[in-house]
Image (tube, rainbow, N blue to C red; front, top):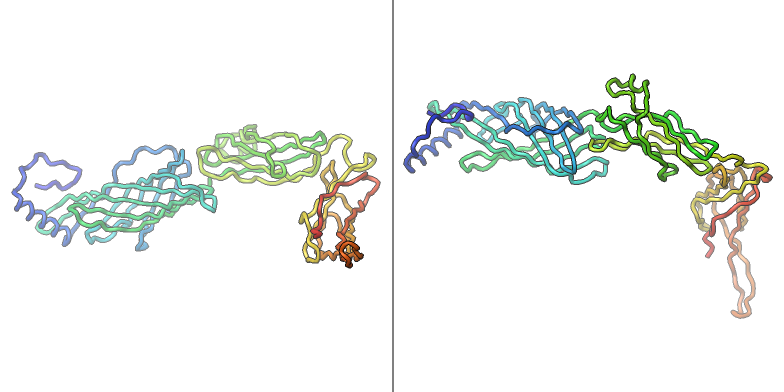
Length: 422
C-alpha cells in the first residue's frame, strides 16, 4: 500500500521489483500523473530558520504571477553586514501552478525564504540585492484506478535585482521561479513579483531654534526619532556652510515629544552649541539613521544666522569688505549674467552700494544683485617704432565700488582677473 501522505513513512521496506516490472510501474506512474483527473495537493515549504528582528519591516503586499494572478503576502526583510534575507508567508491564492497541467487553485499557502548579498546603491538612493531561495513542494497525485503517488518537486527562486527603497518602505522582488519535477521531467518556469510596502523607517524630527550668538557661537535645538529604533537616541550632525560643524545625540528629555509619540520615550531632544566665525552662515541639521537599520540621513532643515563678536560691525571701527564675483571671470563682448557682491569681513553681511564698470560702455551694478551685461572693451592705438606700424591695444575694464555708507568702511579687497582681457 502506498502511503497517502508524503509525511508518513512506510512501515516496512519491500523487496525491489524485477527491472522489467519497475519500468512498467514507472510508465504507469508517469501516465497517471500526466492524465490525472483528480488531484489532491498539499504544498508546504521547508521550515525557515528563525530570522533576526526585522530591520525594515514588517512588510505586506501582494505576490503577482506572470498570468496576473495574485496572492496576499506578509513577512519581513532583514539586512546586516551586506547580506539580506526575507521571510514571506504567501496566502492561498493560486499563485503557483505546477508542471502537471493542473490549475493555479490547487496550491495552498507557502512559506518562502530568500537571501543573498547587497549589490550596491541605486541612483534613487535605495539598495539592490541578489536573492535566491529554494523549497520542496510535496504533492500527492491521485490518478485512475485509485492509485496515489507522493511527489516531491524542488522549487528554485532567483531574484537578481531585488530593490529596497531609500527610506526602507518599498520592497520590490522580481523572481524567476523554476519547478523541477521528479523522474527527470523538464522543469517548468513561472515569473513572480513581490510588491511589498512597510512603514517608512527614515528618522524624522524638528528644528526648534538655531541662534547666532554674540560670542562667536551657534546654538541648535530640536528633536528627532528613528521609527524603526524608537527607543534609541538618534545622532544629529550639523554642517556650517557645507562644512562639518558639530555632532550630538538626541538624548535629552522632551516630555512633549514623548507625549506625542507614545512608546518612543522622552529622550529624543538635542541642544548643542559650537564655535563659528563671525558673519552670515547657513546651518544644515541632519538626523542620522540608526546603524544596522534601513533608512536615510534626512535633512531636518536649513537655518540662516549671523554670528558676531564683541565690538564687531560697521561704524566707527571702520570695517573692511571683500568683493566676490559670479562668474569669477567675465568674457568681454559677451552677454551674460553677472553678480558682484561686497561682503562685510566681520559680519558676513552684504554691503549695500554700487559697482561701476569703466569700459567702452560704462555699467553700474548694485551689490549682490544679478544683472545681464555685455561689457565692451575700449582700445588705444599708437605707433610702435620697433614694429614700424600702428598697434591697436585693448584696454581692460576697471571696476570701482562705492559703499552706501562710505564712512563705515576703510578698504576692500578684490578678486584677481575679473575680466578675460586677452
